[in-house]
Length: 311
Image (cartoon, rainbow, N blue to C red; front, side, top):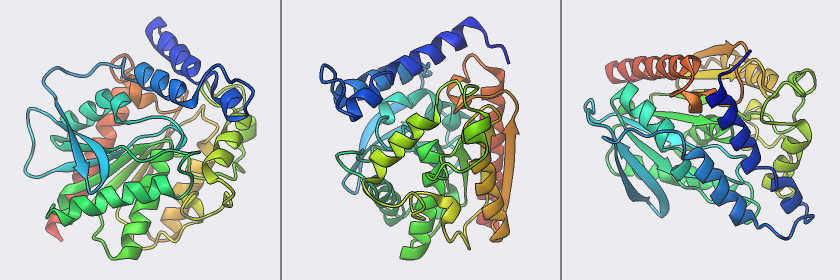
């Protein structure tokens, strides 16, 4: 698929912000630090536009720093708990104001963006545990879980499922539903698309994903259920939407996640978007497919809240 110059430029910037990540992780480049890369990454992501009418404020979610984004219109007590991506190594709420604002507007919901700790300083399972702690805090404040939905991209897309599993196991009430956007669902990287989409994926390589997985896992097995939800016990979870781009290395494993959910009696919807790249939703300002994917996800989550409230 051919993209316009703005989309291509932003994609090039995104890839460039991570150019030094592997050399720094491997100790081959000491002129740049991991914190330098993280700052560059967030600056690049923050260039996606955020509407001026959004109120953005810092919050403390039980010891986990976060951002709260509030649109001009909020329907009741609706909340979207959004989990950012970045391979558990980079990324943060500051780079996600634009995407969170798009969801806030579509859902008429407040959006919480937890700022979980990152690997390798805080390897598996710390990022997932931090995110669960933030959700547990939200419910402990008296927030009705029937008015809460999850969304997340890449590593955050996997955590949509992983955090729900942690909540179920801990006896914390589950949200109404979730949307996993381009989920990094299997750190074993055994899906066929890891081979047949190599070179077609505009942002990822298998070697790069393998390195980031090892960096995050810190010695844990890649088939650990908390890290790779294709291996998790997902019984009893609420409805989940999986959206994945057809050009992604993660395609096959995202399809496997949807199948795993369905086989375990979780209501699941799967959308495969021809020609789309990793987390194309970020480009909603320039890309019609990004706007449509967000609208589809918002409609799915709204239906889930309606069903949960009526139960």
